[in-house]
Image 1 (cartoon, rainbow, N blue to C red):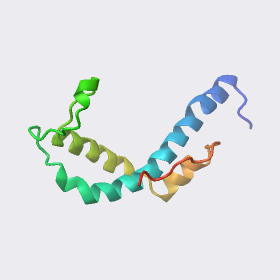
Image 2 (image 1 turned 30 degrees about the vertical axis):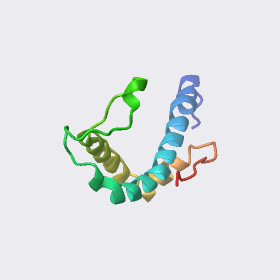
Image 3 (image 1 turned 180 degrees about the horizontal axis):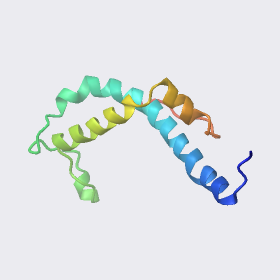
Image 4 (image 1 turned 90 degrees about the vertical axis):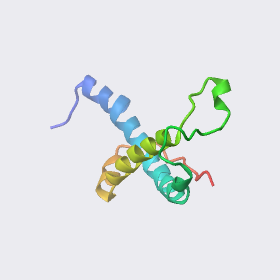
Length: 105
């Protein structure tokens, strides 16, 4: 039986497809991130006293600490562990746009 309910179709097109495209991008970017984090993680001591001095606070952007970076890295690593082959297959099918991603290196 076909799903023809307009609200269900709108949900598919407004939420499922765009979120799958975001997750596909995250998975692609995530493998680069994991490589870089393995190289650079020791430069970020997990301490609130260790501040990233990037001069961005003058722009109104929050000042980050080594503890902040490590906390975000923990979340990234957790998310990437669920992006196995079956998860990537599940998120790739609903995607309608090509993956536009180039490694930042």
